[in-house]
Length: 222
Ligand code: IYR
Image (cartoon, rainbow, N blue to C red):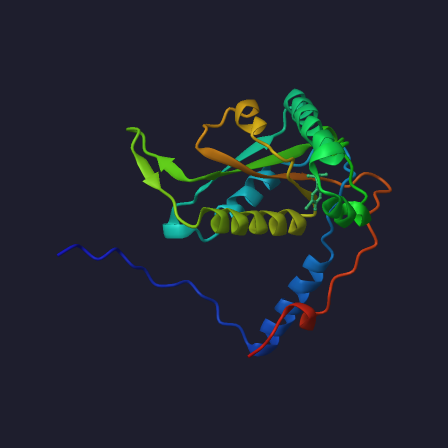
């Protein structure tokens, strides 16, 4: 008979209903102020903040608790310059040839184009990689499960943590972004998933005048 795994008591704080409601409303109000920002200040951000938001990302649930992610914090200015050059090459091909008109039309309200100065200006770019398997020190592979779901949740935690810590964020997906493996020295079984750009917004930064749909537009209760 196999040994059952060790279990420990759950640490859980039960809240009074009023307190629950307040916290839910306060968190919603805070998250509703998050905007995707494309104009960043070069001002550095504290190291400890970046470490803690990454720790938060690492608390995300994952398939079989295998954490199928790796985060590369790109702070080095020269690496960010190369990242920008390589991303803009792909983006130029995207905007001028690859993207179907329908996609370009959908992006028009956001005012995006092939120029990605924020990759160089923002003090931190976090490259998120998804691992289809892990590697043990002896070279054996450990299969990962629900990789996209797990990494997506971890990125959600990361964005919420950065926003809560007072930093502006941008999710960016140069397409394709295979160049990130070589630039950031990551193995070929790691798939570049997304870039998270973080920092203070530039003075006078603007965002598109968008609104978010009301709750009943995107939920159903049965
Ligand atoms: N990767 C391109 C295009 C782009 C695509 C989507 I979907 C967006 O929400 C925003 C941009 C770019 O970064 O410009």
